[in-house]
Length: 417
Image 1 (cartoon, helix red, strand yellow):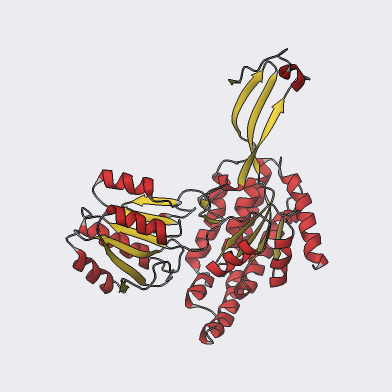
Image 2 (cartoon, helix red, strand yellow):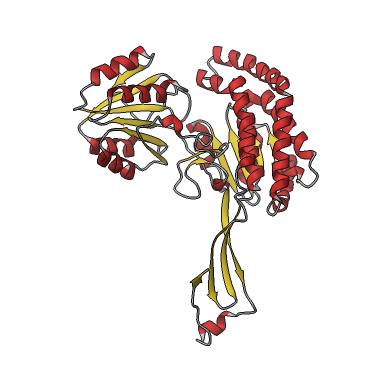
């Protein structure tokens, strides 16, 4: 292992302890400086991004980079606006750390409190999207976590340009530990990070199924994230025609490469507008594949798997069999069917009459997100500030010892306070 990455991780691990009780005002000051520094230097970022796009286009032409990845790489005015606004949104949010979740008096003058705290040092590995750096950094700063970021090589210039502005802003606030925010570049750095379970508390991958699977299989560090975004929309027989058309079109075409874009549409055999729905979607530029060979496939393009099902139960079973537990939707006017779907579908997001594209930290009001998790532990769905905190138990006593309770001299009364 290279000494430079080991030293970086050690310093970041020491820095995380300084973040645990950092005042919220200081965190917000850092975030405001980051937002202003990015806003004042947009031209530098655009220039760097254009360099990456030129190099990426060559890779696309040679078949070494997908068009979907190229699309995620481009940093336009809308993404820049959202990136900056996302930081200001995080500033407005409550500090999630050091909150008392509950308090219980075990006995007189013996009080137990469950209190939120940062996870610690998080390694975040992502592909293509350079705006991820500011999102993750802002959430890490506000929640009190130290981070080591590793972006895809196709975005090296943009990543470095944004990170240099972040680092410049961080270093201007003397109370904030500068070693808490870090960026690495090489594939070897990833391999080294995955071995450092003694220092790194959590790994969050954002990218392809191949990337996530590699990370999950090559580290002892807990991994938070999702391997794929195979999202479904089920059209129940009572679904309104216009609503079904609009929702599916939005969920597929608004941003086809997004992980919350719909990949499979299931339609009840008794739905009266099946042919009209297919025609509408095809006229919207969507390629319909009826009864494909496999349903566990993420197209990341204007392509939809399309299947007619017998009833709601078959739709639920299909989703729980072939889905990725990301986000799934039912379109129906039957409230009972909606409730059954949303209870039985085992996904991080279950929607009723709404596009799957709403599954997003920014749209949920989290300010930003570090990723979307399909895990069953720690955090699920879009992971924002709260998802970057765990909790600890704090016990406040007056010299009590367990032996007194074991012998019956004293007794617990476990009273919530």
